[in-house]
Length: 289
Image (cartoon, rainbow, N blue to C red; front, side, top):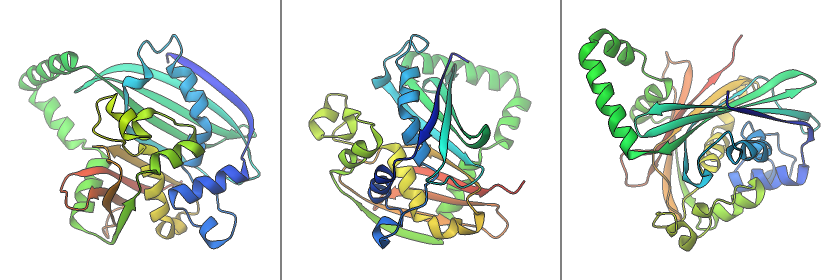
């Protein structure tokens, strides 16, 4: 562990929660009632804590050069609006990855010392030179150790399986029209004002052709789309996601979700309306123990 930060006894702001649900498409506000607390909402509350670690001496890189590549949230029980939340955030890494160096932000939420929610956000610092060296070393290792390569293949991640399942079985399909102001709306309720999400001009300063949607807005939007399917989980589930390529704003994309008869997880993906490779893919699985 590189660093740790905590935040105690945090209340949930009902007005901010309602606006967050509107921006991300959750039911409740649209139906004239108080929404439940989405599983993605504690991430928004934890952002100042996470940012404090990413700008600390423990993290020697610019936060503006970091890419969010994976996110996994586990909710052990439903979060109530009346809960007072204690946050603990830990920074781990670095470790070599194909495209550079990866770090993990582990965030846990407690209510009266009971763990109710946790999240692992994997962040990538791109490093082309290091990535090429790592790929070369990895290739040589695989040549020397076929058994190790076979082990890696047999351990394919749940997210990869989810992507294949979602591609072949569309139990749910929805088209989303994502407005050009989505990044600004989400920034107001989340506090994530990274310039790549706000305007075309500010995004171009960082090498993007235009503003891109927040990854965690997209994850929340997926969770909102799956609300009816998650009702049997009784608020106890794990939702994991891999971000593959950014959604340029404005956008027309297609959300698909599926569940095979023998699969414990519900899988989903978001693709461009006329695209083949996904912007993201993920899975949701009930917690049964």
